[in-house]
Image (cartoon, rainbow, N blue to C red; front, side, top):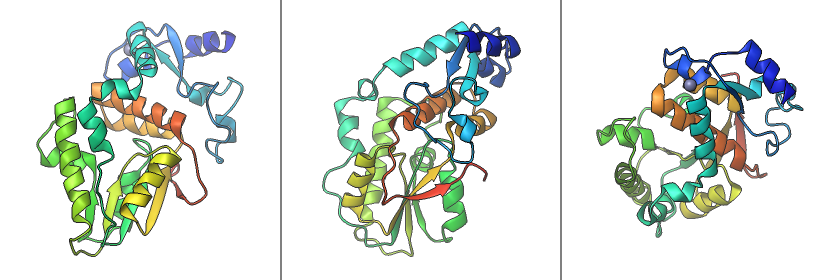
Length: 246
Ligand SMILES: [Zn+2]
């Protein structure tokens, strides 16, 4: 593709390697969100984000290895990564409506869900978040396995179940939930007072991840951003918070 060649000439080094302090020649250009599936007007403040391929904010130069990783992960359906037990834990049966005023905060990795909560939550509020749970359980961020994921999801589900009986000023629950079906499922199960989708463009999320995470953890997060944007479908009852400039 002509545009890719031009981009590669201007950006000859692998962006992922560079992030990890390595210098390696890029051989391919990856479209952060494949143009064929990228929704129109991903971000109204960046009209030029969605374009006919000339827009460079959607492009990334990658070395052979990073490009191969990227395409392998794109082909692999999420369900292939999850065993049955984890699958059942993702949407736990038997949850009851929260008795604590609950806000569900959805969004891609790097969108700014934690920042949003930090700005809106009170000091005694409960925050239910897989990253916090992982830290509580002493699982390092670069060693995700299905056993670790299972352990975290079980703890998360205990905390969610406790919302039906525990007192407390307010609670916040972080879940990426890109699809309307998933968000509806959580609304139905937990009866929150609000569900907020924290929205930042894929480019913004990826830049934030590149600035704060390294190696596998960053790669996994970037893949999660792409997956999130590929599956995101807005619905009218979502409250949307634009976090691109924050
Ligand atoms: Zn590389």
